[in-house]
Amino acid sequence: MKRTIALAALAVSSLFLAPALTQAQTPAAPLPGAPRPAAAPTGSSQIALIAFEVAVSRTNEFQLKLSDLQKKWAPRQQQLKAAGDDLDTQTKQLQAQADKLSESERATRTQAIEEKRKELQRSFEDARNQYQQDIQGILSGVEEKFFDVMREYVEKNGYTLVLNIAPQSSPVIYGVDSTNISEPVVAAYNAKSGIPAPPQPAASTPAAPKPAAPKPAPKQ
Image 1 (cartoon, rainbow, N blue to C red):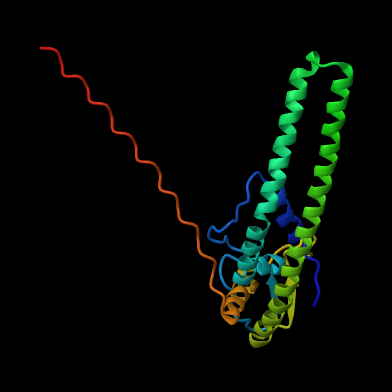
Image 2: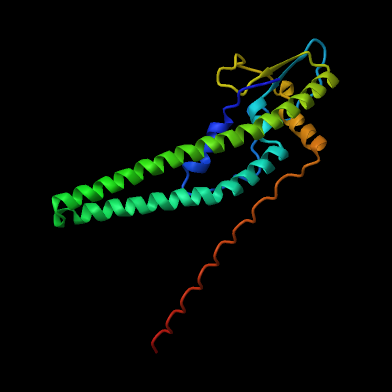
């Protein structure tokens, strides 16, 4: 089943709008409305809830592919950042020297900076669009396989209806925790894919405090 996933835009902004490329590898927070795994339905309860798009992004496969993609795009991001920094430096230099330049020289340098700014903006847009396509490709591939695993889980556990609670426009306003299958489906997907969780970054060791300076001996 095809779905439109808004996570691509978020991933693009995190890569190109942040000052440095970072990958969030902290322990995953509980999925929306899912503080504990779902229990099998009993009695007439046959409705399940899932934060579908969020769950897809929490799979080990997606996280691994996202990490590889970010590494691939890191040099390009650094190149764009360096070009932006250089343009800012030229702009500040022109502003500082404006009163010392002739009108024609000031106009020439201003035009050159503006042309570079437009060129950089085009490069930025091209890179962002291409990165978004790469992200969407990853999402689509994982999403289709994730849906199959979800369907197997739903059929195995006796559910007959699954509602997606990830979109802000979701009609669901309340659901008991036991109906949320987000976490167990993610676990089932990870087990079936056989892909381990990405390694967590090593925690930085805080600097040891400097020893206090010895107090001078009291005068006799």
